[in-house]
Image 1 (cartoon, one colour):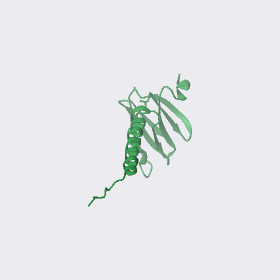
Image 2: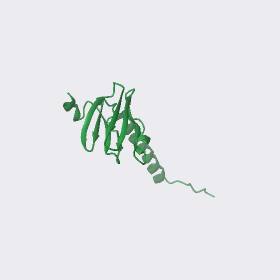
Image 3: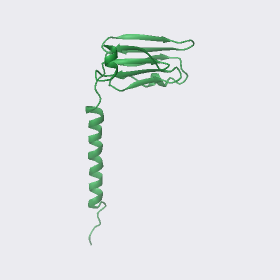
Image 4: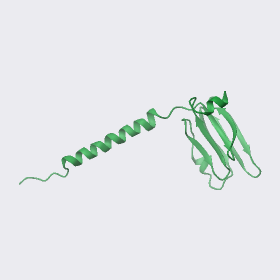
Length: 126
């Protein structure tokens, strides 16, 4: 009696295609596209607050009427050290160092976006 195979040829081809697609996506997203950022652009209430190099360690305190955030640049990374927003999601976002990554504090309307030398802000900073 012939034993029936669990997978057909088409099933194997589909599974292998998905695995190859996932591997190529991983390589593209995590190894090729993200470039280490050069600067961080901080905006408060939609207006540029400042552009800071990631190569210089710095602590930036942003005080608003009844709100305070502390953004830290350290070892080529930026992170939100303190925030008096209710959910503290901006602190939980962790450290960012790749171009295009950002930290956003919605309640306090503050964002910190990492940019590379190729980004549009580069010409403004120079």
